[in-house]
Length: 449
Ligand code: FES
Ligand SMILES: [Fe+2]
Image 1 (cartoon, rainbow, N blue to C red):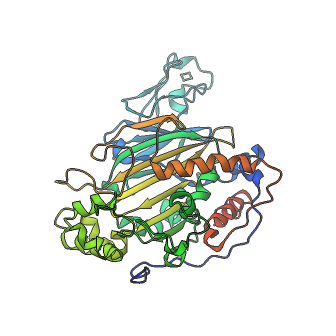
Image 2 (image 1 turned 45 degrees about the vertical axis):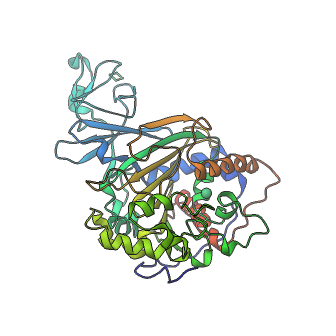
Image 3 (image 1 turned 120 degrees about the vertical axis):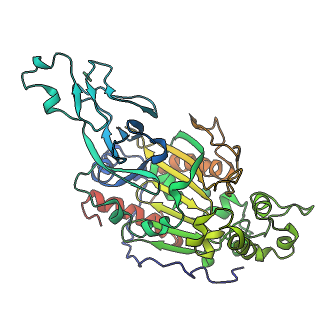
């Protein structure tokens, strides 16, 4: 199927040595291991948390939870963003509730201590009554390391951490090309799943399951020929592991293969893509394997003048293919030419057999375009910025593909409880799963990169 090598213009990442240790079920169920992960890993890594566009003005705040922590991100007078633990330093009452808001001062609802957006304590009732001195001179909100990149707010609980740029390694340059800071969120679905957070990341760290779970492949299927909108053949797919622990997979997309109804009309997402770029469907239907090239050419030809300014930074492959990244430890994303499929698993505050799962979409939308042209499909209006919805698992569909993944997550967690499970047996194409687990152990054993 591949008409050209996928590696043109895509700089490969260095080769990694893997140790190949055993990954057993207790890693997904054991409370003591979860505690070690928290102390050794979660509190030492950069976490993608907020979005700059949620905080346009001085005093605007956004709050997100990770494990037992609530992290408050606040826009400063000078335009920067600071992050604090959402905790009043008087007696530990959380300062805010909810996802976002705007304040002149954060006023604690217990005894009215008032903190400025920069974390300084500005008022405490009866300030002269404190034997250790006026708290306004001695107390501030507890601050965390905070940086911004790609329009996101990133936070690290380790005061001695490396810079975000150093932590992200090759992700920094890769992602800069898409101009992601301009993209807007169109879908925000969040739920709690009855599985360990690593069940989710393991899944997004391999494409081995894709034919079985998402494409109806059976044991009779020739897997090298299962192609829908993306080419799942591992021999046409590019896999990379970075020194910093992040992973990348590039799968070719944009084909017309199996993307037409019997009557000749194209299926989604190809249908919307062809319409958006004024491509006659017969062009692709008659030569489905050329669909990728036809789409790339159309985007090159008119993308720039229609305001898709990032296309000039991207190699041809990125105009049609899925650039799938997993950022250690808990963030996975498929970056398409115009869609950023945001997948994140956050640990539960005290139960290793639960996690909080976010399935969001950000899309480019140049001025003058009436709706985003991502490959996003599912039960969401494509032309509106949908509100963030938090729900019980199963109450709302997260889209066909993610619903299929979730069904696997829930079943797999029950398998990890069994004494009959002897540990994973991984293929080369699952190296990213292995790498992740080895890195968790590196952090726990203080050997981190
Ligand atoms: S706990 Fe916040 S003012 Fe007392
Ligand atoms: Fe999947």
